[in-house]
View: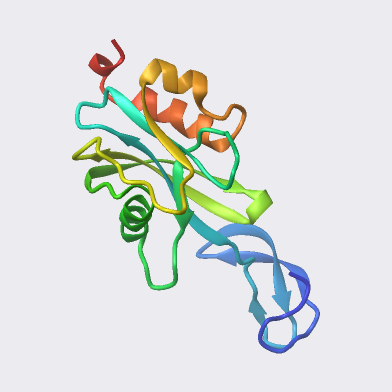
Amino acid sequence: MKYCMECGAELVLKECINFGLNEGEIPFCPVCSEFRFPMFNVAVSTIIFNKDFSKTLLIQQYGRKNNILVAGYVTKGENLAEALKREIKEETGLDVIDTKFNDSEYFEKSNSLICNFITRVGSEDFKLTEEVDYAAWYDLNTAKEVIYHNGLAESFLLKALEKIPQYVLR
């Protein structure tokens, strides 16, 4: 961000102290006398587990053969839980039983903060929509093998597997 979104003036970097905490150098508008914090997208992603946490659902989208997680952007006025349930329903037709925060990561390629959750659904009977090319349930060991490697999906899956009860990892 090089220019103020309000007045169009060129921004300068200025040290920002908020409540005694140094937030570092933040773009500042010398005309409006306001800090202009960088804008980014917010998205949700989830590791979907069946009722007993013995399987996880991975999907493929956009003509790619990579096994990934259900994910999507949070729309204006929507909270993370609403976006998560909506995305799961839109892509798989599944209903959420419960969900728990797993991890988050900034993804520079899409300028997005990805908020990842561990989700349990009530049924394994998914119904694909036009947004998803393929989906399948995998036992946890197989999921680790077939997930798209070296990406956020794999990172989130591995962190989730550390958090679910140890009896699941039989």
